[in-house]
Amino acid sequence: MPPSEFARNAQTDDPMQCSYWRHCAIDGYLCSCCGGGVHTCPPGTSPSPTSWIGTCYNPEDGNSYLIAYRDCCGMDGCGQCICIGTDGDLPVYRPSSSNDVIWCFGAQQSMMYHCTTAVLVGLAG
Ligand code: ABN
Image (cartoon, rainbow, N blue to C red):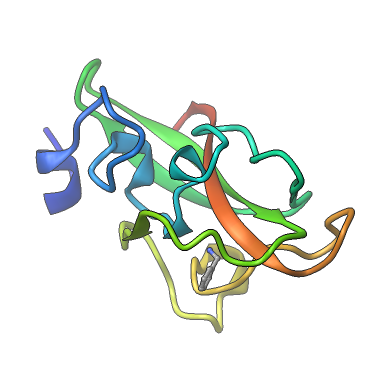
């Protein structure tokens, strides 16, 4: 059964929409709308080596997956397709579980935030 309201409305076809299933806990601009992809940074930016992790339900196969939200860094904010998902998001006092953090720590170029990717890590549980 879908575990959240987001999951009940999630779709698996269009990663340029907030409702795409992997975006259940994303906070920021979708890299898919910024010249990159759901798991690739746009040209001129580099992925953060650090990320926060969400658990999202895939309505196509009924499984839940760990998703790493890796920010793409080194250019000004993309400004396209802002999405805020809250599944499993915790306040900043648990920084490793908060999507309110700009995860550009250790990125090659700079701490400038451009957009966010949603990388499939594996099955949850
Ligand atoms: N996902 C990074 C982020 C956090 C807060 C505001 C913008 C972007």
